[in-house]
Image 1: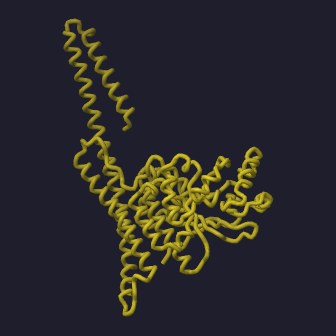
Image 2: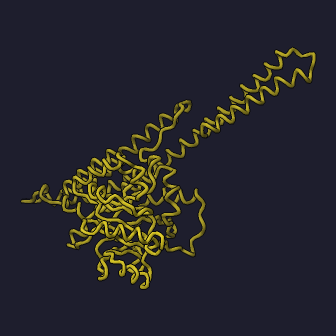
Image 3: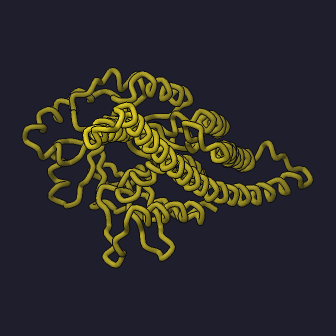
Length: 420
């Protein structure tokens, strides 16, 4: 319950007590007024006691539910760690062969760091689980332990979980209520059914694939897909999004490493959230992993919305600066105001700005978009026009002189194979 709810109940008990104290002497003139007021006080105390009991029961239910979430997530992460350890054992045996040098094997070093990342997630969740159990044993505590991976209130969108430009509805999928969606997300985490989808970003007018944007979708046990716009808010409310964020970031690095192994020259765009940026332990190990795999850094472009960047302020920019020093570059998407500070974008290593095609078609916004295009001429910042779905729309975009496009005309999000 919120503080306001508690205050409302307290006021109701007080009013009930005052009513009893005032009406009893009036109904029984022979009664001592003091007895009436004592009766009113009893009513207030009884109401407060019942309210405290109900609050404790609600708190215990919340603790049990969150402990169940943590148990499921820990079990899922332990399975991930076991899988990576098995691969690591194979690499270790290969490195132990006569004349082998494990330290010189980039795959070996990368796998070690990935296992450490997953172990870090397991350790954080296990620690929070112990804290939650301690809280559960002492329900009188005024606060309840939050899950370690819960997103802070400032966050707006999860890493690489932004909805694709247009969803593909599943007509055969039954409508799901919030509880069913939450259970599906928890089960998908446990069973490794968070799927990665890739959508191409192409150069214009050649339509050559230059990047892929990474999205996520939850696959239910019956095979139906749950689109991001259905599960993101629910998972965020229940403290599961940051765990999805961090795991998907590890998967994204695995995907980049796979393209590197196949000698494919292509980059990846992925959203980065306030929850991941504020997870100091995870970010420290992630930065260490990328420092050991510097060739992978230029292939990953982190993306944040214009609103998130404005709300994050100096704190967010400071963290992005740390990533920039390692060599990462950034993209701004969901731009609603094209009047951008180009110098600030350059200082913070933003190399891409995504614009909705609708902004170009809006007669009121078109001059401001054109002014932005001219302001970026001669600077190493490219504009990517999103949501291009027809040839006619593409012709309009080409007439304005933009160099990159994204949308269903060039390819819908497609399921990515899991790296071996």
